[in-house]
Length: 590
Image (cartoon, rainbow, N blue to C red; front, side, top):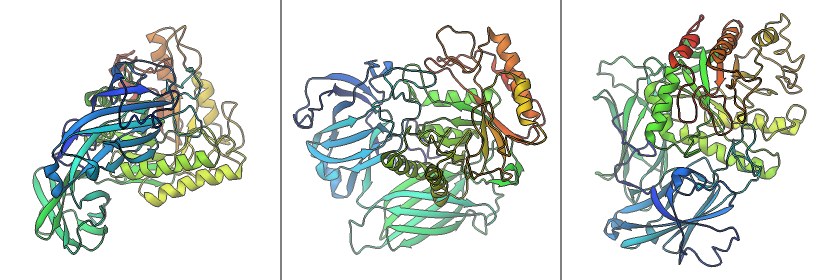
């Protein structure tokens, strides 16, 4: 897209005046929690060096210390000229820091953020001095089940599919220079039938009184300007509707799809009187995801989902992608394997991942990292961050589904507890309140309550047994008459199947023989057996008439979990075209 800047951390909301603060920082462990008392923010002690945004547990950080440290500190210098401050502000952005993050600028406390997976920002302009400035960051983490942690272990060792913890800054840190009054965010909702955009704009607080402000919005496609509007802003929130194409222009609307991921450029300009004071470049896609009966549709065409589960871990950097190209390479590998989408599992990925899925036409199931306890604290921690995540990633056309909870994690008694059912139903309606354009799966895998799609997790390795489970005439699994796989019922008490689409959203997990590695079920001895089992399991899903998609576990091996189609170095275990041919067989619309 025209707005694209390599390594820019927020590719759907781009300003040109920015600086990347990744790289070498001073770093220290504070196991006794004495840093604030000793005022590290005024005089940072002699310390190690760490390469941000990689956490101390990873090799790319330069430390590779996998032990548990609950408190860590960072420090670095940046040079800023005070001359810009007559008309400008400086915003310090963190794309992700796990878990409680406190910030000091030149010894002045700025504020804190609680959470791990959503971005946060601070206006630091009034604390900046001319020339060299000091940034100090304290991050507190824990093994608590009350905080959203996804696949991060909550014990002091790995087991099954839970991995080494992530502590501290794990996504890009950066600053941007903005005007005294600036555009904070924009929410775009395409309306296909009307060929319009609904645009909701939030501005910063009004630092300059008694001025006239205008928003100019410009839409273009492939370099051709299609429409432009300029409207007065009376307060800090503004909602409008805009035709995508002006009446006098001949242009056939280009919808976004997997085979044709068309994207429109859009620019926002904020005016004070007749002067442009802020410019943001972005893009959008025009597409509609809908459900009719037990089928899913993309732009009114029936959609068969062929997803692969992706944990988003790398051998030398864990949750943090080594670089932007590593995200692109993983997406291209998914396409080479014949899948049309990715279930990003228990993680809110770097937003550059979503950009490249938008550009390459890859569908995304966006899933939140879960807590593992149910109490007032965990509910607040989870809900607060989930709201931020949905708002943050709303504009990406590649996201077609929201998944707040997986496999009853954090709601262990949801099958029978009305209180826990009320909570995940509240998450369903809360998500719909923010975004009514996408399906929501309130509890993926089993023990469903209210859900737009019914999802099944079944890792049995015997294809005949798996087939028999879901093709009985009574459809006992769907009608909540029995546990499936001998473990779970598909619906919680008081809930039943209402005719929704049904997807096998986790299956496979085939591991090649490994003495130390873990996988689902009996391991296969070699590549040949892996292909045979993969073929049988996938074909049987094709042959279940009411199933409208699947998600295979998983893209890569992760630490001790060895059931990926690629190893940790991203080498294919089976030639990609073999898997692609299997995925492309059957009467499948993609």
